[in-house]
Image (cartoon, rainbow, N blue to C red; front, side, top):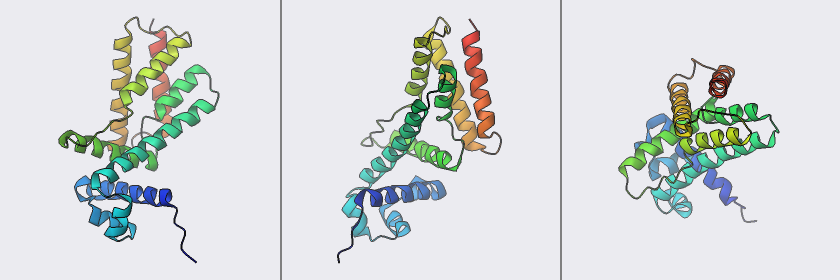
Length: 194
């Protein structure tokens, strides 16, 4: 009986192996040879799924994005009140557990890699756009924010970006509950500042 292989699952395993190598050794060591070895595949089997390393990198980055978007969709499905929803949404932008920390580490590695590789199209769902979406959502829900929407967007973006970087660099300093309190405090101040 022939062995049935779930090709999508295999590609995900290869992408996750790529993440682990990036986390452990840096992107420069996430070569086809090292990825194949770590995943328990021959290089030929790896090339069956990804003929070029760039294709593997794009798939690995897209898997990070898919998981992030999936978490945002779960927030939308919870039926939260507007402020709670905004806070829950923003909380997904910061690494609060091992899974999201790994994803952020991989994200940072690919962003840095993309800055030096002309052909590597990041085409990412950016943090900045996501933060702007929260501001737009709160305005639609009737919350009066600063009269300068660009200033509000940039301020919230800087806060979330800085928080994400701090949590990535020093994960033991702030836990998920503390992160949620900080984001809630920021959003409340933003709304009540007017």
